[in-house]
Length: 135
Image (cartoon, one colour):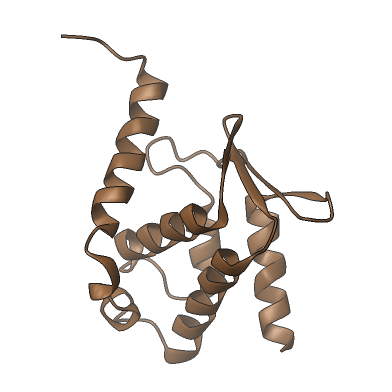
């Protein structure tokens, strides 16, 4: 049996879980995912994820690999689905989505925007939340 380095195996396993959990498609509706959230907070999270998915020209970088916005949005949906019982606000969701569940350490994710600016994933998500609050 082939042995995998722990980091590579953990990443492969995480992405496999994400992909498999998303194969169900829209069957996991926002209301089913966030049953205990107030409607306003649920809508913020839905809007945040939709904004990530619809970004044009943005790239998410993790461990020197580039990912598109659709995959980033899928990850956020998976993270929301698996943490619904611990999330009471959109801000808590961003905090939780910015930390590795296996190590408890912050993810080292960068977001490169179309204009060339780079932000940490957490800073980007919080700036999007602030923008949503203003609109």
